[in-house]
Length: 509
Image (cartoon, rainbow, N blue to C red; front, side, top):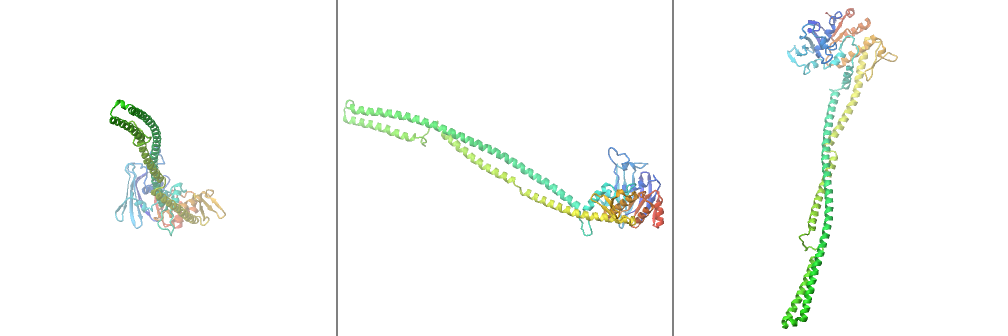
């Protein structure tokens, strides 16, 4: 990408300010308070927008929106940048007004209107984030040291590192997908587990109810059997008493009949004169006695305890027996139903096919994530080596070979190999520290902005450099074949560039 023209329509102190930029180094000179930082901020705002803070502190100096509101006609807060990307020319306009912010991206080569919301601008800028922009190609005053957000970006890059033999591999996206997939499965598994537990609770409640019913039935049967035994004994006693009464009556009648026969035999001559009549009377008496005796024998058979032929309208034992049989039938039905529920409960206590499938998939996801973690670790090592190697080479060029090896640990803490031992960079001179951080920024910008080399924007960042260091860094920038916009309030950059014969586009504001 190359910025070709800037038009600050109304931003901070500038109103309708236009300047044209060229390839190579653009030297933007201005005295203190002339607006160099305003222009630097304007460029960032054009590409990423400016959001107004809300709530407490929204009007403070930390609020970029409020700090750079136009001095005149604050409602008109806008600007335009023209830039080239690839073989095409683009125009980016932005209205920063918080009430109705607008942005328009147009390809002037073919007249196509592009969509910033759908990521067209981000694509043209190589998909870099605002954090990467602030920590690599854009360096503000007194901000040579990188900020914490860069560590996160580097970790993301290192986790997704793509070497020359790698295909399009995005481990972060893949891991995020697996994490979401696992969360969804865990939720489904929990839902299935809850469903099973609910069914188990319902079945367990039914089991408890049936167990209670069967116990009640057994107790009822036991009570009914006891009652049957009591009633049967009582009825047996009644039958015995009744039989005794019948027998007593029978024997009384028999005795009377026998006495009558005897009397008739002995005194029949006095009662009946005819021998034939006497004989008939005797036979009749004998038959009466025999009939009474025979009736008594048959009644004795019918009145035997437990005899089936005995009936009595007051007999309740058979009714109790029928009730006992009915209760036992109900008990058998309940026991069968209880066995079915107990088996169903055991079935639900085991893993269902769905749960087994979800658990298998979770194991597969865990295995995949562990494998990706191993791959990511290897890729981070390779990416870390690339960043470390490129930073070291840039530092070697900037220091004319004096320092050439930087060590960066897992927490992105840097130490410098002095040739004798490694020392923490905080122990070095301020000028060397500035060179190291500048080397790191440029190395990271090369690595993270591979898709589209972006202009390097430097706002008075070389204040701690002596002339030798400044000359080396300007020479290095000139050799990068990238557009550089250097904002400064000093003339020494211009003098050194002229002395080295480096062509520069000079702009005075």
